[in-house]
Length: 321
Image 1 (cartoon, rainbow, N blue to C red):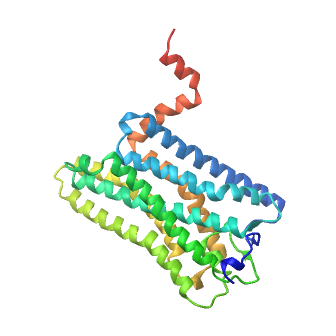
Image 2 (cartoon, rainbow, N blue to C red; image 1 turned 120 degrees about the vertical axis):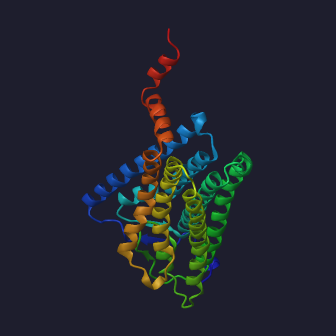
Image 3 (spheres, helix red, strand yellow; image 1 turned 180 degrees about the vertical axis):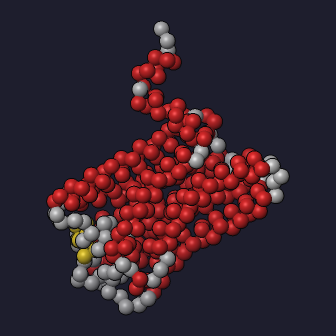
C-alpha cells in the first residue's frame, strides 16, 4: 500500500492515554502546569535577551533561538496531548499524524544542530578570542540558526514521506501519546529492514554527527582551558560551558535512547516515559539550567520580571511626576 492508496482520513488511535476520568483530569492538570512553565520560562529568556543590550552577543542570540525552537517544538505536540487527555477517543488522521511527525522530528533535529552550533561558538570564544568578532558576526549567526531549522525540516520531511509510503497493517493502534517514528514504524507491515535502516541513518545525521562534533569541540576547549595559567580564567571558562554541556547530555541522551537503536528493542511503556522527558522535561529544565548557572541571565531576568509582573510601577519609576 503506497501513499496514493492511503486515505488522508484514515485514523490512528493512541493507546497511551488513561481511560479513567480521574486519571485523565490528573494528567491534564500535570501537563498543563508543565506546559505553562515551559512557555513562561522560555518566553522570559527570549524577552530578557531582546531587551537587555549587554546580552546582544552570539552566545545569547543562540540561547534565545534555542528557546524559540523549543516553544515551537512543544507547541507541535503538547496542545494535542491536552485535548486527548480529556477525550475518550484519542484519534488522529493520517495527514495530521504525518504533519505532526514532520515538525516534531524537524524541530527536534534543529534543536540538536543548534546545540552543536552553540558548542562551536564557545570553542571560538575560548580558543580563538581575537578572531571571535570576525567569525561570529550577526549575519553568520542568523544563517547558522536558519540553516539548522531548514536542514532539520528537510531531513524530517524525507524520513516521514518514506515512512508513510510504506504499507500499514490493519492494526492502527499507536502505543504512544503522539506520532513519532518508533511507534509509527511498529504499524508498518513491510518485512524489509531498509525502512528501519532509514530511521537509523536519519537519527545518525541529526543526533550522532552533531554529538560527536560537540564532543570534539569540548575536547579542544578543555585542552585550551587547561593551558591557561589563571585559575580564575579556567573557572570562568568552565562555568561558561557547564550549562550548555548539561543541556547537551540531557537532550542527546533522550534522543539517542529513542532513535539510535533497532526497532526490535522498542518497549512501549519505557518509551512513553522517555518521550515525556524530552517533550516536557527538557524544555522545562533548559531555562532553569541556563538561568541558575548564569549570573548575567539571572541579572537580566531579575530586571525584566518586575516589569512584567508590575508594569505600572515600572512605568511610574521611569516617569516620576
